[in-house]
Amino acid sequence: MPLPARADSFGCVNSKRAPTDTIPASGIDKLLADDDRLAALRQRRVGLLTNAACLTVDGRQSAQAVGDALAQGSGPGLACLFAPEHGPAADHEAGAAVADQRADQHDVISLYGARRAPTPDHLGLIDTLIIDLRDVGVRCYTYATTAALAAEAALDARVETIICNRLNPLGPVTFGPPLDPNFRSFLAYFDVPFVHGETIGTLVADAVKDHPRAADLTVIESDANPDTPWVLPSPSLQSPDAVQLYPGLVLFEGTNLSEGRGTKLPFRCIGAPWLDVQAAADAANNWPTGITATSCNIRPDAGDYAGQTLPAIRFDITDTRCDGFGLGVRLLAWISSTHPQFEWRTAPIMSLGAEAGQDTGERHVIDTLLGSDSLRLALGRGDSAEDILDPWRG
Image (tube, rainbow, N blue to C red; front, top):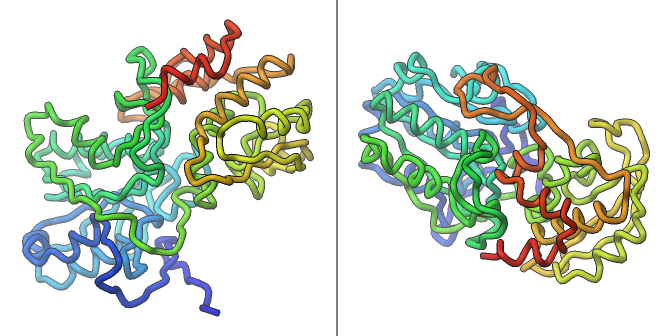
């Protein structure tokens, strides 16, 4: 039995092993194998936007691997690190502000706290920005937005930008409403379907394609998802199954149900004190989603129901072609039509301003998540889940 992996000071799990020619390479691995590119980077001041979820094929965190590679030259090397939501160790809970830090002899500049993009002062410290982040294929997941805002700011400052791509774990499938421009925000930034089927590299390249310095953006593609141990991209996505269910169960953040945050089953269950879980499970088991439902109890340690034992439904994937988004919409349609206790939540809008303090006004959270009010309005009219879903299928 192998020894447990060790967490280093950047918060990443290192499970180092000898690389082999049979393991496919991600964008960061290709960059590290490109001697000519590394030789040029060793003469430049480099900033790296990443977190502990990003590993090389030999199990090193990207920050460590890039820092080591640049240190082999006589140039300035890795000048600073930037971190997205959830922080450099990918261990902050969703929505928690992340402060600037110091790790492994480098300043770690937070892009999810007092600011959402590098400032001109930050970009004056570097000549090249490298971006390596692990996305999950859903538009409201904030890493891609952070990458786009950072890339745009870097291009504005004439800083070369390199995105090291990773594959989308949901694959090329698209599903869900397109972006309504009236609902564009930090959580709904890209003009793509909610389940977008793209990579961070393609999303950002398209977002900056009209920038006068767009030619200074390079995307290094990934061959495939490297065979590395599972690493949580954020605290509540604790398994590959949670990632597959996330497109549907994240919608419950916009309601007065728990989506499992603060339990052992985040994004693998929903619950509420008033939920008829057996009837809901019976209904869900009749839907063609490739997902089974069973009743259980959960006890969140955070959120509106912290400390309460809740009746809940647990979801398990039975088909690799499962439909997490379809499950979520069907559940919302069924629960909202059968439970008078069901409510939509509201919260401040996450603006696109570089400073977090620019958030203004209130909006239904479901509209902010989806970048559209179409689902909420359709359910309010009593439209069936199938009528809602059909126009959104990719």
